[in-house]
Image (cartoon, each protein chain N blue to C red):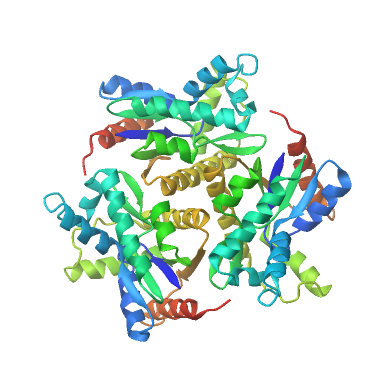
Length: 198
Length: 198
Length: 198
């Protein structure tokens, strides 16, 4: 099975990926944004310094790099979880993380949306900031985080309509009883999906 | 005119189709899921026993069967109402009922969404269950039914964006004054749409 | 940059376009609906009298006209703002203003959604009506206007998923301190976006 895994920044998606790799060896996890950034940096070293720079590329160049990364993912055998963003929030508005061409190449079985309580997202981001991580990230209100999650849902459904695949919403808006309970729950659900046979 | 008619399971879509056929002879009603299931069963008798099994087929086989059913529908002359699901709820998440290829073949004039009060849906499903119908159906909360309706709306709009057609929301969330008032109202609206000329 | 600018009818989109042209000469503003209507009237003078008539055309003819208008827009050099509707509300339901083919030709950098407080929209429409403008427009409830805005958001995201571009929501739901404050704010944001370099 190939699943695209998404969630708003700073909510705990990478933690879910790391825990997933601890819990099972039967899956490859790839970070789509990293793959695109690495390729873009190699091809346009003068233009591309940080991840956001990739959107500076001429549309066709950027598309080629996305397609190339998708092709690499399509060659991975066995279960794959593709860590990516449904959409990125920028000063121009929301920007989609996938295109019909890359979907067609990756042929994901499904898109998984991790949906969080905005208050938890804010708390986790603040913890990151205090730990000196991602200190340049703009702070967002609960309303803005909620909007981003709604927008991501719509992108997921659009992609699924374009390239028939499942859309799984993993609801993590309930209060945790212990640290990383959301992580454990999400990892459990993802493993269930990787093993599920119709 | 060709309309795709959708609504969450157990809310009364089939009743609407039956009543529509009683009220007018100027329309064909086809059940897209049934057509796909029948074809799949004929082609893969050992694999396909129940409707859900069709999603076990390799992606390309399943696509071929969907395309073949769409082709049959495209050959029907006159008014056609296609009874189907925008999305099906499964353990993997929501799964879309249509793909760009089948939309392109069917060329629907519009997609009709029957939207219900979740409480009414629960009551109708309970009535079914007590009558011994669809007893294996999982029970759902009001929130889950509401989410499914919202997800279906997004699928409808995505399909309409892909293959320019109308999206008509028939609101049936108001309280009925008598049994089957929602059915009568929906049938009236559908007949209006079949007869409407711009 | 090429941006598609949208907002529900009667909310102030044209006013935004006019003020934008007063504030900067570095942009062309085109009205997509007008372009399509003019072309359709020339080609089918007996059939097309008012704008709504364009949807009476056979699907292929209508598509050709949309594509031709998109091609004209694609030839305009420099910044372009395309004034259009994400969707039009009709007796058949919502009808999308764009198709994948025209998006592919126009290659917009982004879609801008002007989102208003439904109460403001109703007040502005009433002002129009009292001034004898657009007197045939159907009156709508706050709920209906809200739904239309939500539907437009979903169309924008679907289009953006189909043809990778930004979706910018300009929130104008806050109360104005003076007349045309929303207009000034929206124009400021659009100019920012026209000048923005990643």
